[in-house]
Every structure is written in C-alpha cells, then in structure tokens.
Image (cartoon, rainbow, N blue to C red):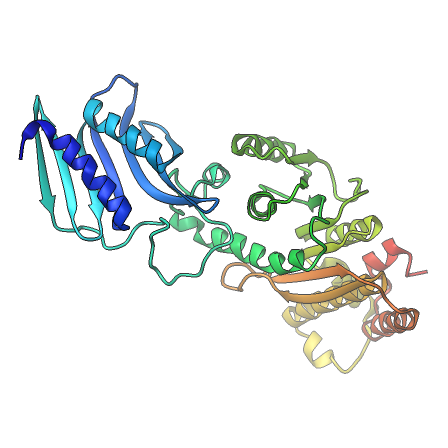
Amino acid sequence: MNASNQPEVYLEKVKEALASGSFLKVTLSNYTGAEPELKNIYLRLVEIKRQAKLSFTFRYKTRDIVKNFDLPEGEVMLGKYVQEEFSAATLFTTTVDWSLQRKGDRWSIKQLGPSMTKPEGSLLSHDKTKARKITSTGKQYLVDLGLTDASGTVFKNAQDKYKQINQYIEILSPLIASLPAGSIKKVADMGSGKGYLTFALYDYLVNTLKQDVQVTGVEFREDMVGLCNQIGSNAGFTGLDFAQGTIDAYDTAGVDMLIALHACDTATDDAIYKGIQAGAQLIVTAPCCHKQIRKEIVKGKQSNALDFITQHGIFLERQAEMVTDGLRALIMEYFGYQTKIMQFISDQHTPKNVLIIGTRKTIAEARKVEILEQIRSTKAFFGIGYHHLEKLSGLSG
C-alpha cells in the first residue's frame, strides 16, 4: 500500500462505514495544529430532527465544544483534520478498526479487530432500551445543567434525574396531545428551581412538537433565575425565560398550562388556585410537605374509625398527605377540572412521587353540590377546620 495515499485510504474507510451502517466513532489524537489547548476530536453519528449528522466533540484542556454537521460537510472537515492537524486517527466499526499514524513524513495504516460492538448513544444503536422523549445528544442545556458531557453521555450520578425528566415528558405528552392542536401558547412553571423539567418541557414543546409557545419559570431565588436564564440563552431557547418572584404574586393571566412540582405545603395550593384563576387547560402539580392539614388534624383531635392507624405518627403523616391531595382533587373538580392522581417517579428516587393532574372540562351543577358535601363531611370526619385551597377559592365560606 502506497504510504503517500494512506490518509485517503483511511478516509475512504470512514465513508464506507457510514454508508454500510457499521460506523461507530472516530478518535483524532496527537494534535499538531496551532489552536491553543485543543487535545482531541471525537466523532459520533447522531440524529437531530430525524436527520443523520456527524457530531464533533472538540476536547480542550478545560472544556468541550460540540458541533454537528451534515454528513458531506463533516466528511470534508474530517479529511482536513486528518491530513493537516492530527497525526493519529482511529476508526471504530462493528466489524473492524482502522488505525492511521504519522511519524514525520511517513504514514502507516493498520487493520485491527473490532474493539466495540455497538455505538455509544448514536442512532445506529441496536439496544432494546426504551426510546427517550428527551434524548441526551445535542442538548446544550443538559450539558450546562451537569447531566451529560459534551458528547451526550449521561453522567452516572445524573441517571435518576435524566430518567425523571423523561418520565415527566412521558406523562405530559398524552395530556398535551389530548388538547386542541396549538392551543398551548403560554406555560408557567411555578417554583421552577434549577429548571431541569422546565428546560425539558420547552425542548419537547418547541423542538419535538413544533409548537409556538412561551414558557416561563417562576423562582424566588434570584441567583437561580440568573443561572437558568443564562443556560436558556446558551441553548438558543428564545421562547423560554425565568422570572424572580413568588407563586402567589405571579400574574398567570393567559396561562394555558400551569406546572408546580414540589412546591412546599400550601405553595401547591397557591399554584393550583393560580391555574384555576387563569382558566388553564392543564394543571400539573407534584405536592410535598403536607403540613397544613396535618396540623389541622392534630388540632381537631377528632376521634374516628381510623384512630388505630393515625395514632402512629408515620401513618398520621401519610393520612394527612392523602387527605390533603384528595381534597385538592375535589376542589379542582368543583371548578371544572377532570382530575387524576398518579405516581410521578418511583420511591427509590424520591418520596415526593404523587402527581395531581387537572384537565379543563365542564361540570354539572348537581356534581358541584355533591363535591361540596364531600368536602364538608371529610373535614368533619378528620376534624379539619379548613383546607388552604378551599379558603383561597372561597369555598370555605
């Protein structure tokens, strides 16, 4: 084999692997160019908006930069880097590896046995894993949030959070699909925190469903708001912003979809009421810290058939959680929401695993009368003076 044309032979092997579907990745090392601190370039095949792309990860001393290119353009760029700026390149395929080395002016190419059998997160993967609504590749916000590296690999300590994000979107996707097409124009995420789920929802609505939507994360901590706005800007999410403030003070006029995940105690009630006031088509909350009703039960000291359970503190806590959320669902139904309560994420990840979902419907007047009686009798049974959402909405008299 003529040593002078071995880089061309190597590049032809890359093209053949891409064409045959056996391509796994390319690693470029021993950088000889002039760019400061560049060490390596890694190439993977990814799918973005249903199109195959070559993803280049530029590994610098202190950072990674990822750029995605159409296959023809990516092949041209690879050729330039192989022939001019790196002295070592390895092609990994499902059947064989090819190693290209340069020493001085001399090139050598070697055929090796395959060191990999399947791609790492590329569209060629034949793994039987469940397809994710939010893929990890090409997502700058996942990198900035510390969930993945620049190549899209989810960090080991971020696996649970990544699963939670996808389960969240899995739950919301059929609810969104059940609404009239294009009806969600304005979304508010109350108590958005670091914004993991806010970013994922915006990504899904805009980039997957192609909806024209404005999403706002409402968060009390000013530093967190600044961080999230910067991450959104880096990701190019022009319809996403984060506002500093409290749930009860935020103006929800015009909101079509309201989210409140793990808003503490009565802050969940504040969020639900804001959604009711706005006439939002969809209200989704994941409550936590059910203190208000537990205090009411302890204060009321009502003796009933559940005393043998609620005499134990841990069971009283669980009972208070169920009563609190059950009453929330009833009050939402009174105001015209079809409600359901379901598991959000499994107990092994977090105990905060209840999701209350309300979809805007109509309600008969007779059913509203029944609901008021259910609320009254439940309060009497447990010795509850009031429920915060009931008080906010004016149902407590």
